[in-house]
Image (cartoon, rainbow, N blue to C red; front, side, top):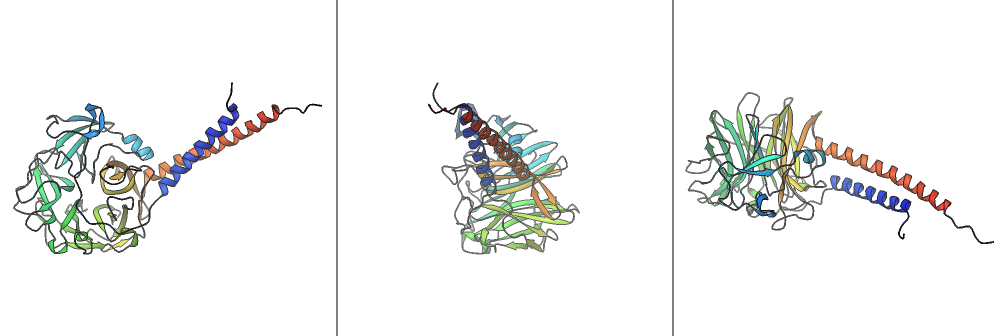
Amino acid sequence: MTGRPRPARAVAAASVLVLVALALLTGCASGSDASDARPGQRPRTGGPVDERSGDTSGTIPSGTVPVDGRPTQLDPGAGLLIGTPVYDGDFADPYVLIDDGTNYVYATNTDDANLPVIVSAGGDEGTYHGDAFPTLPSWTTPGFVWAPAVYARGDGYIAYYTTADTASKRQCVSRAVAPSPVGPFVDDSSGPLVCQSDLGGTIDPSIVTDVDGASWLLFKNDGNCCNLTTSLWSQELTPDGLDVVGEPTKLIDADQPWEGDLIEAPSMVIADGTSYLFYSANAWDSANYAVGFARCESITGPCTKADGPWMTSTAFARGPGGQEFFAKDGVVWMVYHGWERGQIGYPQGQRRLYLDIVRIDGDTPVRVGEETARVLLAVVVVVGMIVLAVAVALLVRWRRRHRRVPAS
């Protein structure tokens, strides 16, 4: 029998194990140099894959989703443990509504839906219900429905969403109502709810409820459309959630180098009297996209940014962003999207759905998944090095035993 002796093969295998673990550790800590973000319209995403066809590169054809939905596979366990996608379809700018113990996951418009929604009671089984918002209001056009946030209010539901205003030719924020979390949502307005047209428009709505029960809308002025400063804002909602009160309050501007002159996708977590404002920054279709945060004294500020990004590219999610938070089982969860390594940007890439747990350590938010991944990878490195050391010792011993004795 030819080839390497068994000890040599063991050394090679152990070396590969250590190198892979080190590569993953490097990937988890990696970021990328900041660059200016680029303006421009975002295309519709591909949406959920058609798992029944066996071709996971194809999306579900429009109009083919049954009334009771189509089963779809989720993987929250691996997502939490090692940071892989929870869902392998294109599902950008995710938002999770918990209603009566059920998870409703919404996303930016896809090829077949203005407001795609996946429903899950937990575990690895979900149901894709197609378009929860099949008919848009007459003052807008399809294809630019971004970053939804869905709010349970009374006996109904309100979806806040970004869409194109044909009159101002800006992206603006509107709202639609429905009797069910899966729709159909209907927007009966004659124009946008919030549209800072003189600041480039308004996008990326998010909802936060204060400790006194008042609900607030967070959003971004879309200044990067026209060389204006991008800022994040808050504005109180009326008790029914259908209108805003007073004037918006500016929270933060894009002013750190890593942000690339662009901040967006605000979301907020309130803990121990502090409002933690999270946001995405830099070019959304690049590995430079990342998540930052600021500590705010209240929902209306003042806010102080942390230095540098809070979350950059991981081993399995490049250019993470679009983060949103929800509470369940006494835990704060974060959903976000990211590109898979080597598949960044359209048309070759997809923004996959990811999941993490966040806790506040002192006055700093911490990703529990990041801690878990680092511990697991560190264990792999240590075990790999031990195996490598043992394999080397065995190889030395084997060679000594099989050393040829010189002829006399």
